[in-house]
Image 1 (cartoon, rainbow, N blue to C red):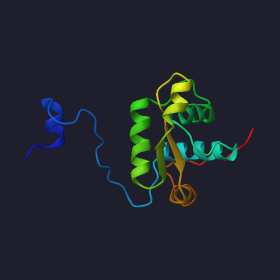
Image 2 (image 1 turned 90 degrees about the vertical axis):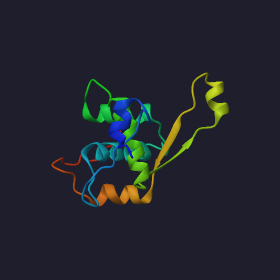
Image 3 (image 1 turned 180 degrees about the vertical axis):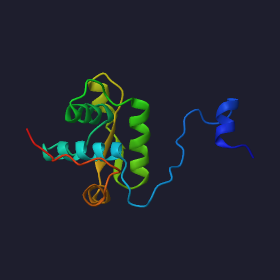
Length: 134
């Protein structure tokens, strides 16, 4: 049986996939921490659900950076966080997207385990930033 890497290199099999990550239980990676911080800051401002472009802007603004997170990385991390139970997601109503003349958005929401992971875990060498509201 061929491995995922062999399938990807040979051109057979899935074009996009995420590799399983090995890490200590309870570990939150810096990018995951930033996304959780951004999502919780949005929630403090009354935005319970967010889409990828919105959270990318929130993280960029909180960092004070010029560039957004690369979308390939962003959606892989969001998928990994959803599989960990830290986020849930749903597709927005197709009628809303049609009315606004754009593609449907996948909407994410932080779960109770996501909040707990944010509150209790230490990030590998990254200090947390206080949540501020404007």
